[in-house]
Image (cartoon, rainbow, N blue to C red; front, side, top):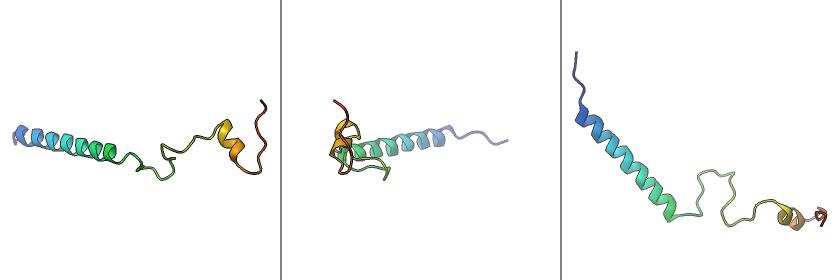
Length: 63
């Protein structure tokens, strides 16, 4: 039976961590980019009372 190559496994874990940190750094460098095309951008208002009232053809919420 072959013996496990621990140094290879350790190197692979280190490379995976490095890739993950690089991806995280890239995401932080471009905060407006979204991986999910259906997700709204951070600077867009969420749909709430303000968003519903701003849409044409809708009635404003009761105050």
